[in-house]
Image (cartoon, rainbow, N blue to C red):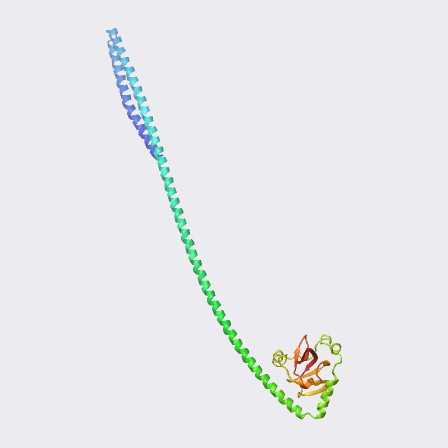
Length: 317
């Protein structure tokens, strides 16, 4: 817009410059025309024919001058229009060239920015990937150390438990052996101290409760309505009762209560409330190893020689 304004001003100045001489020429020609007319006024009366002859060449010159002026004006206008068109074309070409340059520059900048963004994204992605890999490696190493420490702790704990268990088992076995020895010694002492009458009473009590048909005579604790006697503590039961802890009734303290035999083992009185099977030996209470087992919420006395049958018993202090 600024270039177009300057160009228009130049063209207007150019036209005014051309029009000024033309106007001056016309004024001179007007003066020339006035001057002959004055001369004609002075000599009108003296020379009318000569004045008429001089006026015709002046008219011809005036027409020629006007024609030349029109040609010059037309030529100047054409030149001015041509110059204006050239200037407009030049301005358009320059504007189009500038527009193409701006577009190319914008495209280059956009492509450069795009490449920079892509490179930045790639770098960020690679950096994030390295960070993730490092984090995963650190986590894996940390997890591995934790697992190793946990395994070591578990192994040490298991080792300590095994050692404690072995020590407890050894101590328990030692106590059992001591108790067995003491019981055996007490049984021998009691046997030696028992009189023939005591032996006869004990044998009679056992024989009176021998079953003729144990399957029909036997009743479990469930059939009896549930066990209601004393319950041996678990740690004491594991140490002195169960299939692994057999003993013999012979020589143990013995009583007859309500017609049923009762004997003392490991500080507990054991009373039979069930007849013993007819398939057992006649003197099983003197010769066979027996054990107390807790089955179906009740205590039963089993014979190691005949493990299939258990006599319901009651425990008391």
